[in-house]
Image (cartoon, rainbow, N blue to C red; front, side, top):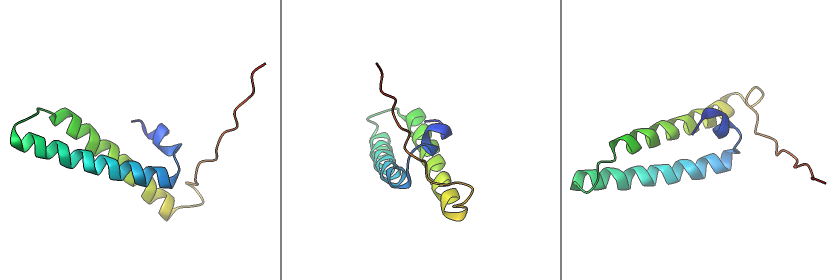
Length: 79
């Protein structure tokens, strides 16, 4: 996931997705230890995505004025 897309999410969504990624990583590491899968590339990508999420969360926590919560965009009605 790109950092731009992650920045569009609000903090609650980031926390829940980070938790989900942590659980996926645990399951994937467990499967790799048992020899059931060769998901090393997926594990690396999950770790990087989680690190991006945690970095953005920390940035929002430390600098709320320069890294504000995203504002929901209004959808335009098509005619």
